[in-house]
Image (cartoon, rainbow, N blue to C red; front, side, top):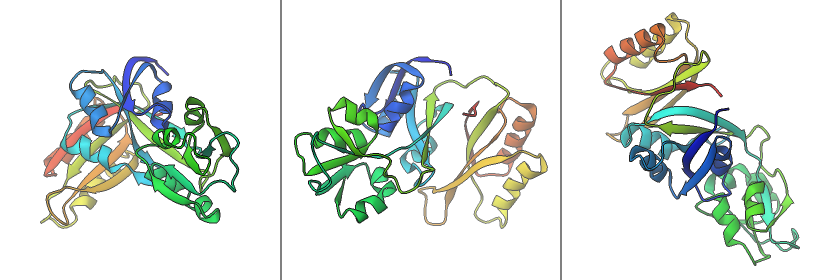
Length: 270
């Protein structure tokens, strides 16, 4: 994978986003929220940014989808998919009998419900897995859930590894930019659109455009449009690059039959 020089990411250091950004970046700059990362790219503070967009267990990251739809005109330049191994992180010398409370990001807490319930530990939300690890330092009655990088950064230990409820836990991250990625021959394209509410079967008709052209959909997701109940935006990923003649024809046909269409970018499939 090509290394990018400067990249912003959802921090702080020690998060899974940090781990993903480390795969492609030399100089990494943490930001405290997803919109802040996207804004850093939109304002040319950094040429690229990394944020999570979906998890195989917990589903989409709504703030990322909403920000791309409503707030920022950025392009998805790459995608990164990493396995999520959640660990119970403690102060050195702590045992399970010591632990009364556990802290982590809400998605990490949700991914480890069985372990938390079985061990009768009180869960608490933190702004990130790394922040949770940092905030338990010095208190043996508290634990955090996070990755090995967080434990290493803050001088903590992993008491119980791989405590997530399901083994097939993966998170997909996107690298955003102000520019498009050139075609590679193994690309996917992401779009957002909304349909006319007064036309029955409109979503069926849009999906039929892909079927008749034999183009595979790799994802379809709906989000509230924020314009009233019953009004939705649809996020679709599909094989092909927007510069391909067939894909361009498909995008043009969708544009003619939807109320709103936004192309989020074409990029290499991870």
